[in-house]
Every structure is written in C-alpha cells, then in structure tokens.
Image (cartoon, rainbow, N blue to C red; front, side, top):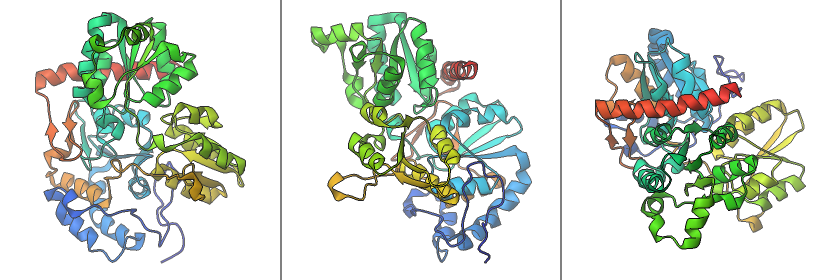
Length: 445
C-alpha cells in the first residue's frame, strides 16, 4: 500500500488515518455488544490486526453502500473526546466532529438529515434529540457510553435538592445546567427560567443569569462552577458547596448548622458537588513542571480552580483544538483535558511540527501523575458504528439505540427508562427552552 494518507474525504479536525498505525486503542469485551451487534463484532475481532489496511476494507463493505443509499438523509456525528479511531472514521465517512455546543445544534441546522447517528455519549444524543425536528430520528452507536459528571447528577439526585431549595427560595432560584446532564436535569433549568451552558459559554450564561437577580444552582460540575464564578468576579463567600450524587440528594437545609444556613442564604451561586474524574487529576505542580520546560499550558475549565489560575489559558475543547491548529512549528503545548483528546491533538500537532503533551504525563515518577482517557466515553468503536449503519439500512436498528428526548440509560446495565408521551412533552418543552436560551445568549454575545 502507498505511504500516502488513506482518508481523503471530509475532515474538519485535520486528523488523518495513516497506513500501518493502530486504528483502535482497545477492543471492548464481546459481552459489551448488543445481541444484534455481535455478528459484526465477531467479524471485527477476527480481523488479522487493527491497522487501516485490515479495518477499512471491512468497514467499507458495509458503510459505503449504506451511505450511498442514504445520501444526505443520514448524518454521522462524533465529539472531539472520542477515541482517535472514531473521530477519524466518522470524518472518513463524511461525518462531522464538534464540541457539545455544536453537536446539539446539528439536527436543527441539517434539516435534510432524517437519521442522525452519534458516536459519542448519551447526554449529547439527548440534547440533539431535544432540538431535532419532528421528521428526524437520533441514534447512538452505544447506549452505554456515558459521562462521570452526568452519572453523579441524575434526576433522582438533583430533583430532591432542587425541591429542597425551591421550598426555601421559591422563584428566586434558577438552575444552570451544564451540557453534561440528562434532558431531565436540563428541564429543571428550563422550568426555573434558567439555561443550559457549556464550558465555552459558561461565563456568558452566568453573567446573564446573575443579571436576572436570581440565586443560581449550577449543576453538576463544582470545578466549572467555581472557575466560572472566578471569571465572573463572584467571591468564595458568595458561593455555597452542595453535595453531589447521593449526598446531594439526601442533603437537607433543616439539618445544617445556623452558620451553614447563613452561608447558603448569602450565596449567589450554589455549586452541585460532582466533578469530572478525568480533570480532577490535574495539579499546579504539573503546570509548573511543563512551563519550566518551555511549554505553554492550556487547560479545560473542568479542572480545579488553582490549575486554571496557574495555566496560560483555559477553555472548551473547541478552544483547545483551535490552539493546536493555530500553533506554529516549534511551539510546545501542554494540554490538560481528556486523554483521547490530547492523543488526537498530538497527532494533528505532529503534522505541523508542534510538540503537544498531556499535562499529567510527567516522565518523573516523583510527580506520581497519570493522564487518562474517559472510560465511559470510550465505548464506541468500529463494530458499533458499522452495525448501527448496516442495521439502519435494513430497517432493523434495535430500539435501545434510538434516542428520544428524556430517555435515561443506566451506563452499566444498558437498561433504558422512557417517559410516556404526555410527561415527555412537558419535559422536552422545558429542556428545549433551556437549550434555546443558551443558544440565544451565546449567539447574541
């Protein structure tokens, strides 16, 4: 085979599939595939290796005929955080890579797409489905692909805390729901007059919310909430740390000390207590290590506040990717975010003569650091994509892969809970209101 780049189709990220390089960072256990997907997984696992020379012809056999038949009626999507093979493969087959904000708008912006197939996580597919047109159907290649932030801010965690706070503050309380939440939590934001936010527009959304004179419940990321408060000039004494997960669900104001209640009453922003397991590994000493070696340090704002304060810049995945794209030959960047993203960024940077490292990958054992990818997000692979598209062509996609706004899926068992039509209609209206408000705030800014 030629040494030239193999893929030649649409690729917004600039990533390339190089001959001979492994196309999959890990094979999922066979029992992680749905029954309908197992024949495809068996074929994939029987391939002689995971190089493009083996994987791409196998994928082409299924995907090229199906995509030719569908044409613009099908839209493939993936997030920057997905493992490099899915990002590259989705682009190779004409799909689009985006951050969570842009993904949420894809259905609304691409009205010709009747079938939207997302190789990412469930909350992103839920947001797409919430904003989709009635003629569009949304599918996820692996329903069990999730997010640790969302896992500790389920509706059954947040709703009791919301009711507890509403009982005390009434209409004065407004929910700001980070994109990394289910549609049911986003609906609480809509019902309270609040909005959704992403890491790229959190400061704008918080500024808008504070202008309403409301007390904010920021769900779910305590780090992003604290960082956004710092960006917005909200001092620590005007913030209150609520619990996360089951702790947050059980927390009661009546059981607080008088001093805690006073702090709560004084707070302008109440931070939900969950955080991203990937971004919590970053520390200031890691920033110092790489900067001392000539690296510019860029971090995601789900990182702890001291890390963001110490860094040279902080922003969303779109911000971080743009920084790599804009880097000049000889530049050196240390990036603090999810490991698959940094691996993809390093591949892009290498083409430009730019050196990219993961902030936590310090080669000195004294630092006891480790850079990691998100295991719950990395549950999409070539067999899932191939199976979904081929079964879609045959009209046999399992209902478990169809995403309807308001669905909740257990990331471990794959069991889904779907609301009845009337209850779903109310929830979707509230969630859509919160998403549309985010878009309005972002676009006018």
